[in-house]
Image (cartoon, rainbow, N blue to C red; front, side, top):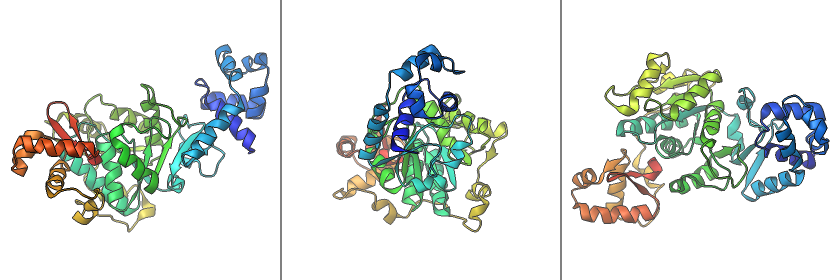
Length: 373
């Protein structure tokens, strides 16, 4: 494909109404994307599925718009992938509505490797945090690419645990490259960029909006053979990913939780309704026969691996505070009791850590370690 044709294709993808079906209709009728741009308005309107509004939008955009988007992606160190490209993920070609353009930043070879999606609640429990660390870390050590959505909570924990374990990860964004959302994940964004891969179907610089995340979720499940749900409240956004995984014919596994925990209602119901319970890493690895013999290991990360991810210059009290918050979100009073320090002194430590992007406050006096979600 010529550079001009690629730019024309990317330009068509910028038209909100042009998804996989309309892109296929345009290419079938006009032979090329360049042909679609030069086609008369009346001809475009005669193509099945192309409304007058859609044809108007197509006539208002030019291949030069696409060329600028491609250049912007390259300036950010990114790659633009079309379905015809060898690096475009084969698993995404198989879903009902594959992206007409995919933007990637980092190691795109990971898009072809065996992968597992791990998703869960932003407001997780300490149990969910530890289960996520163990499963994501074990999967990474066994050779699976861990995929999640770069959100706060268990998404961020899954990415971090996989990398801490020496494995690899793919972060699927609900916005364009170059936009860090949430802002607290800046360190994680940079880490995944340099040691994993970031992917999105949104053009560089596009901010997230209400419709971004359901579209992102279908890519999280679409890139993986198995989707693991760690914790999810009833009706949570995590369940959207479950629905897309099932619609794509992918396997869903769920980690059982306490029946009294609100954030385990969704996962326990999934198991009741037929999802495979994930009790140990071997349950997951049975879905990846090509990794036979790679058993992986569960358990917390060794202290040396954790320490390597901390910025220099932290005091012993800073490190002790982060160790407590690694077990999941905690109220300031509880952290003070565990550390045996006055609440006032602890708040000073937490503010300093927050300024470094290492912890974040939540409503009601709770705090969590941002690297752990």
